[in-house]
Length: 196
Image 1 (cartoon, rainbow, N blue to C red):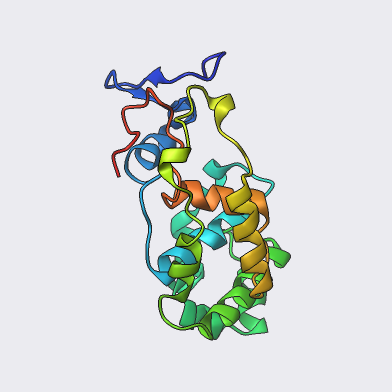
Image 2: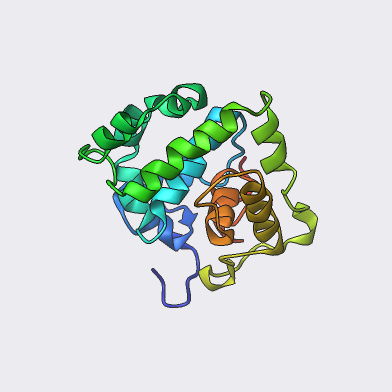
């Protein structure tokens, strides 16, 4: 990462956010997924779960195990994960393809049970209702300009917790907002800013 956190040229010469070049696995994620709009209850449930599992770890750890998570949690289909039993949770604690954290595994199944009772599209509508106006957000020039928490992520966190979801603190909620395109935190000079 550049000392000042400014955008850096990648292998193709295009400028990217410095974290997007810090590991080979990040390049495709940065270029094609991060900051692009994600819709759909199951897709958002996956992102909520992965962000929760990331808490206290690097995103690279989660990204490298993403397919393992998808296999373990039945593609993050809310209805299927909601049907998981204590035996399923015990099985997941032995699954080396995921992060074997009992509290996060239980939160994932508990969150699925909560979301299974919602109307179709309700999670999508709730999450996206907290997207800030893009016009009011200046493009970050360096990595240090990117916040970890915002008023909107704090409000989203409170709304999700009020509805019964767990492991959805304000920092996790902001990471979700970044990953799912509610905000565009690609640096001002990044070639992938505004490409959604």
